[in-house]
Length: 225
Image (cartoon, rainbow, N blue to C red):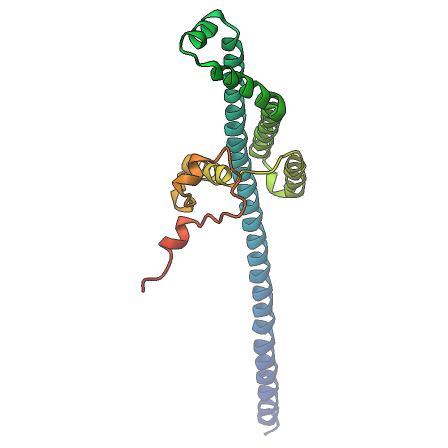
């Protein structure tokens, strides 16, 4: 009878140890899996945020380079027009036409353009926009060429803010137009802004600082009534 008693006493002990072991081991494994999953999600979210920030920086470089290229060309064009009129007013043909048709007031037109060129400094401002344009193109090229661009976001942000410091007051309608052109270049027309045609007409002349250009995406994504 003794062997039977030993058998009945050892079986419950063995079962108890196995049950405890089977309860604690999966619990620790689940905790490790949860922490590993959370870490993976955190790393993935940080990587995605870094990629989005780099993409936004590249888009800003594209938008601003378009803006400054348009401003540079606009100012250069007016400098050429004013120089042409000033030279034309000094020719004998211009004087003969003015005397023949009694258009003495025509002499004021080149004088006004020459005065505007002197006061507003078309050439100097155009060179400033040219300098900023080149710096933005260089920054965009450096970001695209760097394989570890996501790890240097602070450096890129510092550089682009240094460029911002050299910028003059922005013409908002022109800035919105440059935004739309950059979106067209990327094939992202859904992010284009709505600009009134009157603002587009005077985009290089009037700043429109109080204007609010809503994105077309807001209209398309609005729920139906």
